[in-house]
Length: 176
Image: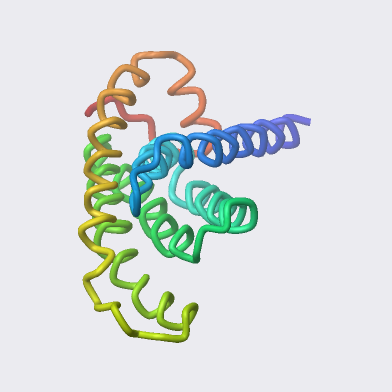
């Protein structure tokens, strides 16, 4: 019974994180940037760990593509950032490690991989070049990191923060 309860709790929290990301990302969007997606990737990386954060990013990207008509950038940008945000937090034990993982994953890797995906998606490489997405993705991750860092710094002083980390099998840390 305990294992089934834990699974239900994990899926419920994952569903809530997906819902938050899907709702917040389009509301607080800057043309070509999704800083709230970066905030949610960092929060998910810290709370849920790399695998669940990646699942969240894939689900959110697919929902935004289906409902909002967003191109595949919704996937290429977020997935690597979410995974590396979780890895960065698990390796460093600090929220800043999650922010750094998001910057590397979305700002660099995601932006560079978006070029060939968009060439394939549009069928044309005209007006596209390898670094076209990098400034926008980096800007979004820096804004997202600036929002997520103080948010998680406050949240980490709550009992729920540690309970959620334990639920997802993460090492519990308490440093920014």
